[in-house]
Length: 88
Ligand SMILES: [Zn+2]
Figure 1: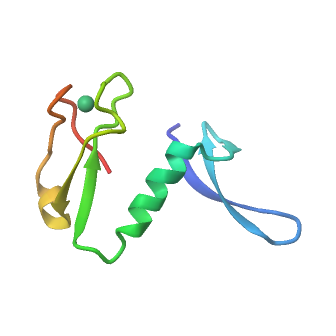
Figure 2 (figure 1 turned 120 degrees about the vertical axis):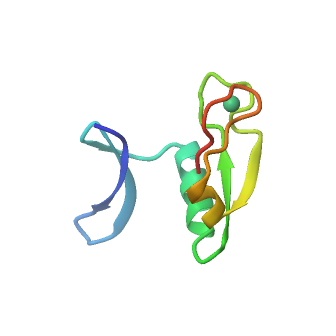
Figure 3 (figure 1 turned 45 degrees about the vertical axis):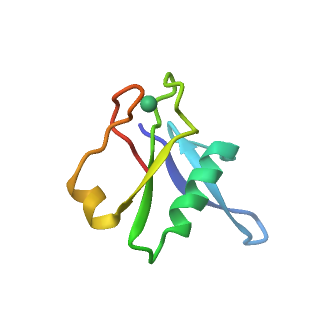
């Protein structure tokens, strides 16, 4: 089961964004939070950033490219360093 974002609601009805990891809710890591903030920040923008998410790539977390939303939905871009597809 893949990781996905969910809402955890405390007893006092305070909502929190959490990660469901194999069906178990946990607090997101800093990297997951940064990714979520980046994607949410692009809402309404026609430009999105694509990053290499390959954990074994030396370029992970460093390089990124910006493409128009339409362009990124039509084309697959690959990391210059490891060749894996780049993701949001
Ligand atoms: Zn890479």
